[in-house]
Amino acid sequence: MTTKTDREGAITETILPHTEQSKQIAESIRRDIRWRGPAPETTEDPFWQRTNPTNTQLWLDSGDLEAIGDLWNSQFSGLTTNNSLLNAEVQNGTYDHFIPEAAKLLPGISESARVREIAFILNLRHALKLVERFRCRVSVELHTDVANDVEATLAYARRCHELCPEYFLVKVPLTPAGLVAIKQLSDEGIRVNCTLGFSARQNYVATAFARPAYVNVFLGRLNSYIAENDLGDGEWVGEKTTLASQAAVASCETGNGDERTQQIAASLRDAEQLQRLAGVDVITMPTKVALQAKDVLEEPWRSQLDQHYEVKLHQGVDPSLVGVEKLWEISDLERQFVENAAKASSLSPLQLQQLAMDHGVDDLFPTMSEQQRQAIADQGKVPVHQHWQEGIRDGSLAIDSLMTLAGLASFAAAQAELDQRIRDQLA
Image 1 (cartoon, rainbow, N blue to C red):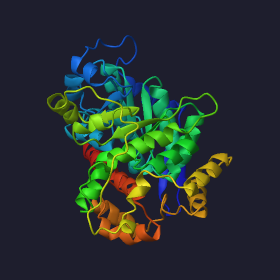
Image 2: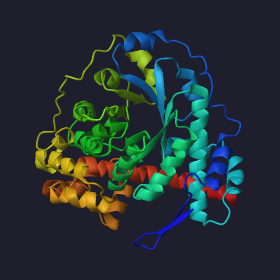
Image 3: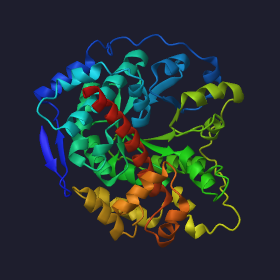
Image 4: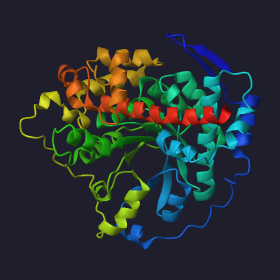
């Protein structure tokens, strides 16, 4: 157990990997779950075989065992979960009986640390049940409290990996602390899914600096940003960004024989988007999109990797107040920044952020006041553009970095609900 006090005086207690307590917790998580051995038999699905002749891997974005089971076939190869999806499983009471048992393994720590640790335990136990049933890679999100804490991220990520190295991918958000942690984890051979990416430049930076196994574009939210803020119809924004990110990430040569980072297209809203993204490394889709696909898709997909979708803003919208091109373009300054960052022997999150600013890339990791962070949280998954447009104009903010902060705040809200459920069961 380590104890850390931040600049605001908040104390974080973290159980370290390889300790006796960590081993006991891992044994409790694994209890009665048969996650090793032969994979359960899966069926072929003629629809998905016919529809997807590309090299795109198909994953499902869900933690619902039954909903996944109704759709699962040999054409699916992975699952993505997050705090919101796990919260839905915990709120239905599935793990109420397990929470007091987990608490017995955590004597002598503060309530906040106990709740965070139990949330971690529930997350891993549910993910291991997914592995038991489907024998596929499962992306596991860490507690949002550690999103800006390198050492805590490393400790939880290592424990997550140790529990199920064959199948678990650790999801770490695209924050300065997250990128510093991902770089270390990648050096240790731990596969990371760098989450909450919204642009080609973000994912290029993540790949060139930290070498995660996967990066994401939450494309549906990008379309929503443009449409809900009445900047345009929202068509093609996320798709164009995802294809640009795929190309940018693929251009990053490892130079040491490592597998290259793969691009995930995430946050899909409807099945029509599947064929628009054909050829991307991975598409992860909600179960409702997978169900809809059989009703609306008929022709086999063709790779769209060479496609350049056109995005139009409404007439009268000032492009300088939007900066939408930053979602799919990578500037020379951004390339120079990450080249120098990758050469550095070690960087703290603040040093990484400062290096970006020194290269004139202030809007990649914007400095936000507590009031601004609260405004982002209050606005939900899609920030109110008018509130932030002057920052976008002066180069201190950008759509992608705003969306990352909004996404993290949204996950934190779901995490808070899950944490409260745990507290209620411990009362």
